[in-house]
Image 1 (cartoon, helix red, strand yellow):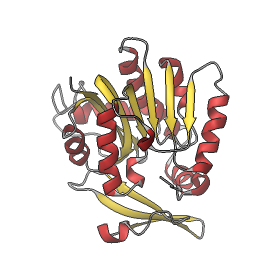
Image 2 (cartoon, rainbow, N blue to C red):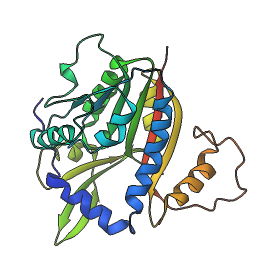
Image 3 (cartoon, rainbow, N blue to C red):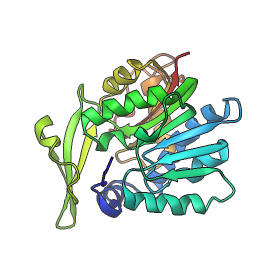
Image 4 (cartoon, helix red, strand yellow):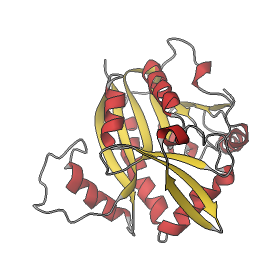
Amino acid sequence: MAYTYPDKNDRITEDLIRSVSKGDYWKKSEEYVLDLALKEIRELPAPRSMLDLGCGEGRLFQVFAPAVDSIIALEPDSGRCAGAYQSAAALAGHSIMVLNTDSSILMDGQTFDIILSSHVLQHIPPAMCEKMAADMAAHTRPGGLLVLTTTHTDEAGDILTEETMQDGQRQSRRVSPEEFLTLFNREGILPVRLFAENSILELFRSHRFELLLRRRFHYDGAESAAYDQAANEEIYGLSGQGPEGSLPAAKQYTANARDCIYIFRRSE
């Protein structure tokens, strides 16, 4: 599949981070949830194989390569894939194979212990999202893990937006499902689908994935990952699955989170 990621050089994304993040919070907030994923991965028996679907420029290779024995990384955007080759080369002591393609290259019956999808689903058309979820199910071994990070909204349904830069300022505009489909492969326009949690849970449960843990991150106005941890324990309880556990009588943490990590296990 030929695909060009529309946010060239991550300009819109980086401007968003600069506009909402204080200090190193954005980085520390992501590290907080990735550490949770690493903990689950390290509990799997070795050897551990990982498929990184939509690896971008290989930003997360350095995070996950020490915890697994091999990574196959797929990236259909040729420009971003060039960056992934460089990222893999910088980790020469690890087994990382980068391919400029999508999941259609995978063979029937080829499975992995872990599939990683980091901030991909929100930037692709809904039909492609459904196809990607089915591919993840087909290529995750029974008992294996899916580590998914994507956008989040507290609203009951998904929100579709067009993200652009105008006069140095990031602009976000809600669009209809019909208009959303016209935004892809247009440089300088970033289509973003903000997922309601039920949308993600229903999609992946329909493909026999069982939720192990979920955590929101990148909270508006937060300054440390300690806020993330406290807010998530209030929302989900200590298990990370739902509102069980000891919860405060009244919510103290009301900021919106921009992203969420979901860790699923493939049913046996």
